[in-house]
Length: 207
DNA sequence: GAGTTCAAGGGTTTACATCA
DNA sequence: CTGATGTAAACCCTTGAACT
Image 1 (spheres, rainbow, N blue to C red):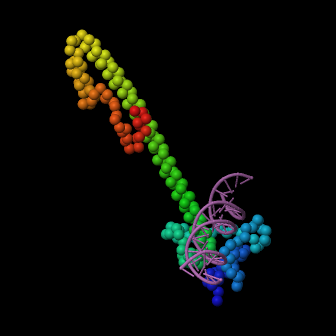
Image 2 (image 1 turned 45 degrees about the vertical axis):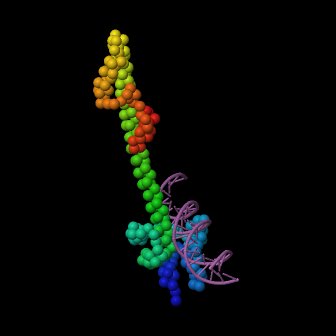
Image 3 (image 1 turned 90 degrees about the horizontal axis):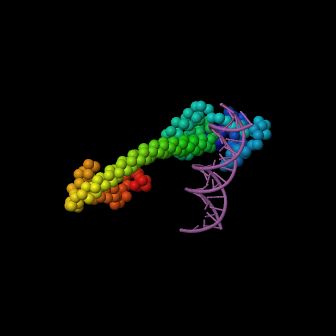
């Protein structure tokens, strides 16, 4: 009694003469693992030469639907699909392998484009932060100039006054009050520890 | 004729069976 | 039980025919 798959393969051989005839095991022959032999040219063996056959639209549609359900192909499903599609189970397995490879490539491409987007927005963000740093540096320079001017003014006043130490103490608090800073000594911009804001560690380079 | 697509080839790995 | 050997199938990367 013939195996159903072998009967099926015989039917395929009838439907597609010349295609896969090399891979269909003959009566009493053990099933070979290796499929077709590589042919140097299609017409080398005349009508017996291998001709690559494209799967039909319906076959591909059914395969795609099955792939959508589950990317992995168990042996039972492979045989069932093969018989539904009129294909060799090996062809179904190959199709799934190739389809998984295409799926992986697509995934990789998507991942790459997502990373690219993230990189681009990070670059823009970095530029904004850099220009912010420049603005703040300008402000800092201005403030330092103000400090310099005020301390020169204080020096000028104190040189005419006998109680110089008192007047300096009287002038300082209102000056820092202007910047909304209280309780600081003259080292206003000293930072004891590097202050890392989320993802902004690089800012310390400018400090 | 160069580039792309896709079924299939071929090598490797893994799981299981058999045997000494 | 265990290690060696064989076989089948799954997987991955490459190849080559067909198509654009």
